[in-house]
Length: 249
Ligand code: IPE
Ligand code: IPE
Ligand code: MG
Image: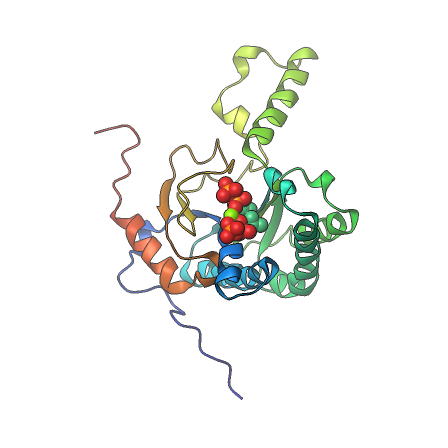
């Protein structure tokens, strides 16, 4: 049996390769609603959501987008029913274990950001293993925000800087945007150029509050498990039509 050909394997001809976003961030929303529409429990939506993320990662690689950041679990998501939270933690662990070797072979460099210490120990171990295994990879940079909160990230950076000031290693005036950014989880990765949110919600939900300062936003009604290369193509077309003025005229 031959493998099913992937649609839009290569960069669609109507996209300008030189003006692609260098970093795409995605709020993968709508798994629960997707499942509900199918008459299935919410967790089935999360399962299918993993497939959508896998293909988006490959698509970024195929089309020449060097960095992808995905919001997998927010600091607010602990407020969900315990069964759902438990399912998600187990899912993350299982997916990592299953997919790590292939991603490593494909030269993906994986990084997890967020308050990782609060995650189950066995998940922390898989996360650690995945980051170590891929640390020298030079391909796409894949960042997964897990137990991530933008405000908490900013507070954490403030604490580190305040400690350095207290020790006399730093003067308050030394703190500028570059130094501050170097204390965020995303240090060393350029800010996202494009933020995609699925399922139609017009909010940022505590994601990358600092880093999204000048990102272009693309919101689609499509629910995350249905997000595919056709949708991504549309998002990139919309992005290429934007005029990024950065406050200028
Ligand atoms: C996003 O889908 C996945 C996570 C937040 C983990 P949701 O689970 O938020 O799906 P909806 O928004 O309830 O449909
Ligand atoms: C944002 O989705 C978090 C993730 C996608 C991981 P939510 O579904 O948690 O966001 P709200 O609750 O609609 O703001
Ligand atoms: Mg949601």
